[in-house]
Image 1 (cartoon, rainbow, N blue to C red):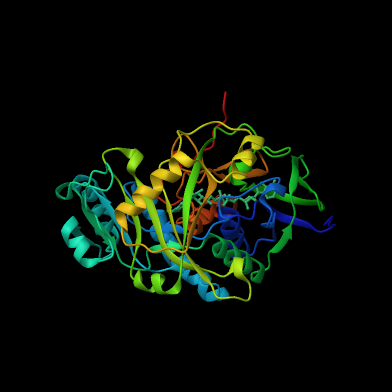
Image 2: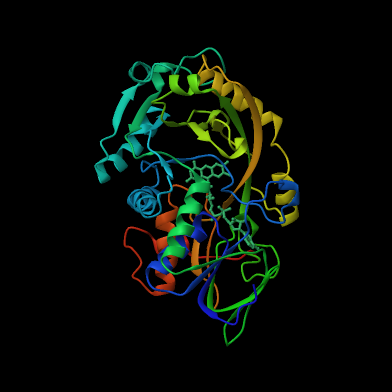
Length: 407
Ligand SMILES: Cc1cc2nc3c(=O)[nH]c(=O)nc-3n(C[C@H](O)[C@H](O)[C@H](O)COP(=O)(O)OP(=O)(O)OC[C@H]3O[C@@H](n4cnc5c(N)ncnc54)[C@H](O)[C@@H]3O)c2cc1C
């Protein structure tokens, strides 16, 4: 990959944030190289993993946090625009259902009012009537189950879910179409000098005027100016359920779901069945429904520890908990098979990504805080805007996105 051509910007990490940032930069006429690893089949062989190797992420505008709600809302039209540009379907617009105490739902309703989303608020009984395959009954678990204390807020399409792999594919294609160069490589060293930035990888070296690091949970890999950022990690377990076409059809209209209870250990999110063509090349798609939920407290972890976690199938304690949640929500579910998987989310002290300039020539967009899938296009816009000296949007408190290092 060693190139004599020097780029204006090298974006390191072709994930959800890196790909979106590269597209914004390329659209603005910047000569950008997007550098990242490809998803290899064998997870044990991966040096760095990613939080986007998955079938679905919940996407919605309603959010208890107004900044997240604004970023989510900004992302909706961008997902659609990139889909239209590339023909890659990213969004599964099935609507989103948030189930929580009436007080919690009232907080969310403010996003509905702000953005005129046309959400529908319902009691638990009204929710069951609207979505007959859902059971919000008490009894099967220790869940808050008391119907009187659960309300729901349904956000209409295009809320629903986002295919994270498709998002990366679409944003990368749009960036390349706008003039970006996509390089498949594992970056081992990012070194800045007064002259520029050298990005060394297993495929050779490139140079650029500036670099943006969007390396997700693997920001400590190799030599990187992002080393030492104040990041913590949540180690997730998720339960994936294989459905046949008949069962997927029965659940047509099932929105993505987030449910919050008095005991946070009982919280969960669910993404409705999506066709997965990857594992069955040439055959019919299988449909995969996914449920995830509470995870361990946020921890510090080394790259080796994160790699080791990604090589597991998650934690059986959380997997059993998720199976109970699923039985509570969809008691009549008929599945063909189930398995669990592991994933990682990256957290910052402010609860928002570090979108910042670290040194003269180095910028970062790191720390998705569990919401960077639904907001990736808007967050990519913030990162690109910072590099291009666009004015920072007044709806987003700049302080929340400033990077800090440990110690
Ligand atoms: C189980 C789970 C459920 C989630 N659910 C939701 C949800 O419902 N809604 C939502 O909005 N968000 C959700 N998220 C969070 C969302 O997926 C992440 O916030 C998002 O993927 C972060 O994007 P990123 O670009 O920072 O990191 P990533 O998507 O991980 O991308 C980083 C990229 O950088 C690459 N990379 C790292 N180091 C190097 C290197 N040295 N050289 C080359 N490439 C490198 C990685 O391989 C990867 O491709 C969830 C996450 C998990 C794990």
